[in-house]
Image (cartoon, rainbow, N blue to C red; front, side, top):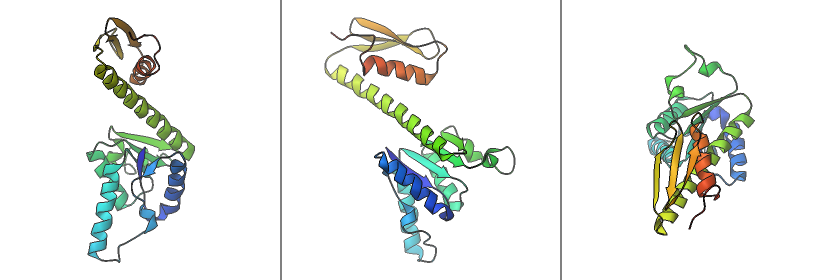
Length: 203
């Protein structure tokens, strides 16, 4: 999983610590601005180079992590991530930046943004849960492609409404999800059926 961490220069050590933890789980950092710090006094060419590298880091990332408090650059990168509709996790030690009124920022509330308050372990838990869901969705698509390429006929039909589907593979079918369940439950059900082979056998 590829990640980019946005924050203010004063938070460089926090950024480095989090990056080391994620790399230990074989995540890949798309760009590490902590290796050079501020380049404000290094001329226009260097400023342009770093700005482009940081935006490219956001572009290449599967997920963008924002550690508050952030500066102007942090919020520029958050804006870029929002425009690209990247999954964004914003972390703060307190809920102050997320309170209504002056402390908050409208762009903390985009639909692609997850807000995390308090212990950084909560941030890691949220990131790993998100990554697990993304991996399940990827495996589902890969399995569907595999089955189609093997000549199986696959189709989906309406089931009980809500987050439910009837999955047909050739002449066999099964029901996925539950009517009052979440989308995540439907994904898990499809994954169990297609990837783990539970509830349906393939001829």
